[in-house]
View 1 (spheres, rainbow, N blue to C red):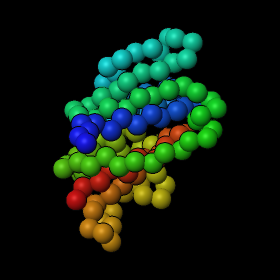
View 2: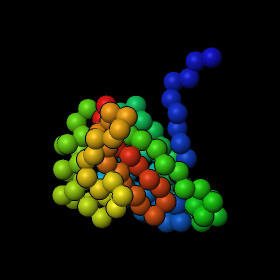
View 3: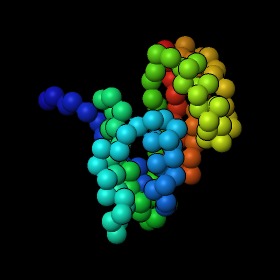
View 4: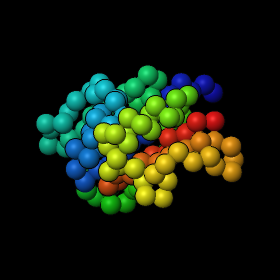
Length: 120
């Protein structure tokens, strides 16, 4: 078997929270837009990464995913987020920290999910 991409679905009570996190803060681009539809949905992408964002109160209440974004320039990413979106920094990992497993990490948290930014 050969797979070329993993595309997670993230459900929000209000999709605008996801757009703030992914489009505004992390600088993903909306590549498919059904935001004005009865069931708002969009696809956001950055490089080879793709995430489907949905507005769905029921699923948002049931699912609270966490995932990692790996970068080679964690200090630059951190400074930009700290300067412009400090309210998204996770209170338990709000500064770059060298973890026992050897990775540098900091974390973001919005109303729906946690994102760990990591550099090995």
